[in-house]
Image (tube, rainbow, N blue to C red):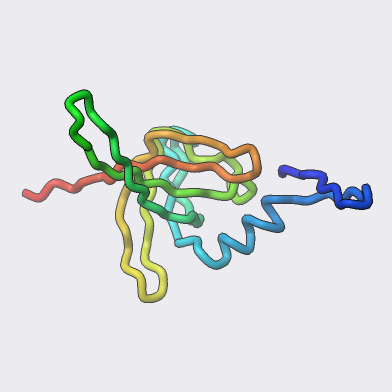
Length: 132
């Protein structure tokens, strides 16, 4: 749990739990159901349900020949306080449907970064199922 101390203009200080007071309400609105399979973080353990905020961000890279290469980066933010062990690189997950929103699909975690304030960003790679 990450606590911050907030100082007001008159010198009064107050503890501030960023994860509880900021992230929890945001996750209550924007998080989607996710099934995590902890193949690396907890080998041998079964899949479990959780939640996260899904986002795809554009990436534009200028190459040496002045050509712009466009791609995307897919991420899932998770609240650390909701996990006994935060997912690690190599774990897989399935982002399911939510009310009128369709399921997004299966992904592998390829990078994990904590923001130090109770939230971890999982960079994802879509798992493509081959068809016979």
